[in-house]
Image (cartoon, rainbow over all chains, first blue to last red; front, side):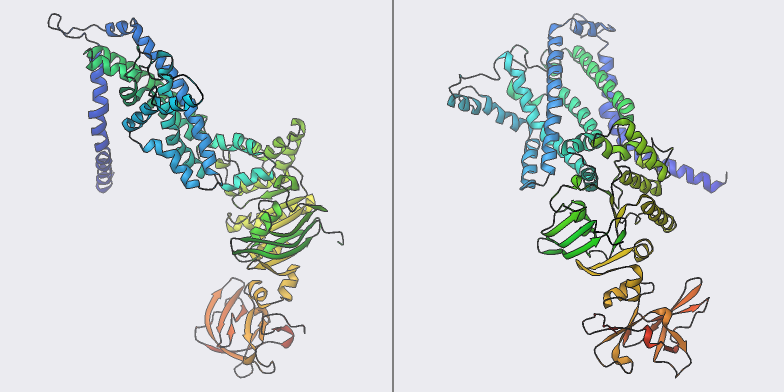
Amino acid sequence: MSAHANLERRRQAIYGWLLLTPALALLSIFAFYPTIATLWTSLFSRGTRRNPVEFVGTGNYADLFADPTFWLVVKNNLLYAGVTIPVSIGIALAMALWANGKIRARSFVRTAYFTPTVLPMIAAANLWLFFYTPGLGVLDQIGSLFGLPSVNWLGQPETALWAIIIVTIWKEAGFFMIFYLAALQTIPEDLKEAADIEGASRWTYTRRIVLPLLMPTTLFIAVNALINSVKLIDHLFILTKGGPSDASKLLLYYIWEMAFAFFDAPQAAAMTILVIAVLAVVAAVKFSYLDKRTHYQ
Amino acid sequence: MTQAPFVRLMDVAKRWNGQLGVEGISLDIPEGSFTALLGPSGCGKSTTLRLLAGLELPDEGKIMIDDKDVTTSAASDRNLSMVFQSYALFPHLSVEENVVFGLKVRRVPKQERKQKLHRALEITGLLGYENRKPGELSGGQRQRVALARAIVAGQRLCLMDEPLSNLDAKLRNSVRKDIKKLQRDLGITVVYVTHDQTEAMSMADTVVLMKDGRIQQVGAPEDLYNKPVNTFVAEFVGAPPMALIGSEAIDGFGKGKTLGVRAENIQIVPKGEGRLSCTVNESEFLGSETLIGLAHAGAAGLCVLRPGLAMMSEGEEIDIHFNNEHLHVFDAAGQRQVS
């Protein structure tokens, strides 16, 4: 190979690495290294004055699996994810289909739907705190008009998690709608016309054409929603603090509690690793299996 | 062909918030004919087609298809098929699913669906591509899928909205012939929108030339070419278009009229013997002939054809001659005068 071609190749390689470096550095410092450090921490016992840190292998994980609170939190989180993900996606899709149609005040509708997403989490949580407050809250006020008894939505184990679920759906649906709206606008108008001429009803068109074409977006949203469902913590701080009696405690909140309230960093690390493992599996399924079955334009 | 018209538009108008759509469109289309709606962009030809398809509803007028008033019917109730400019294929469905989409929607039994699919793919030469997605096909193949989808249901009326405009020139020629043959073999009625006069002239039995939302002339291709009703038609139809000369420039025609003459009827004659002297301003070699563009103060679009390679230098002064029988006379408003 001639000298200048070699030089050109090296130049290209350097160029490539230069482009790669910022992301690589940031990811290494703030994602890869903490992950490995967490994994490492999770394999050791908590150091106290009497018992120095020692290698316990999967001991922390065994403790975790024996902890009933952990299972309660997992169950809560599964219920939370199992309800919020499909419901918020469903509502987002319905709102997007509507806001994409030829309706009056379309931009107003879009903005209104998107507002919850723009609000800071803490502010939104305080807003809902006001809605849910027994006696004074909007919900109770409306209820009392119909003679319903006052309900402490956030204060009783039966309703606390559901109250959180509703706040999340309210917050996420508008956000997801924006993605659907963007995707809907990439579907050419003439597909609808072609389907019309072929005699397809609005429902057939939606089911056979629109939904499959929205699949990439749905997939993207679903993965995001799943990640969000284990990421929720700020609402809990304001609304319930995980209570009453752990009824509304979710994974991240429990991890935080474990690490900074009970100061059991290894346990928290073990739990973190489990969450990462589950999310990694989900991401792998998405990128390998579902992607192949989805039509990308 | 003296049947009752299969498709009838009566005084149809469509306006978009003050902007002009189409106005006063009346048209009779016999069954089994090939009608081309021709015109520059924005002339309302696509709007006319969409009104016919039921994708738009007219503000005024009546539309009849096969003796039924379909003015306000939904597109699906008009028993027609359509080929879109962009083909409008469903990108996530295979060729087979695209073609039988309408049959499935209309609940045609599976066996019949299979037969019709096979026949449509056979006609369009797509056998063996059943399982491909549109994204895996070439432009020409996609175009044929759109055609297959249009003919599979056996509708008697097929609308085509510039179906060839996304193909390259060579393919366009062959597909043009294919579509014409398809229309004849199946005996279907085709209404075809195009801005390309070569397409319209070579395929259609009847050409409808439109401008600014109104029909200018309806007729066989040779009528439009030989007897343009106004100066717009004269200038639009034919390549090169008809030259228009102010009547003052030529003796014996008075003032205020416009005379049209086609390039093939103009001869170059020795200096001093012609009816008009002009300056050469361009030479274009077309292969079998050379097109000489001429400039004259009182005329527009003058040109003359010379056989073979016969370039002339720019700025050369020449005299031209033409016979009165080849002249088209238009009055001051641009309308053809009966001679």
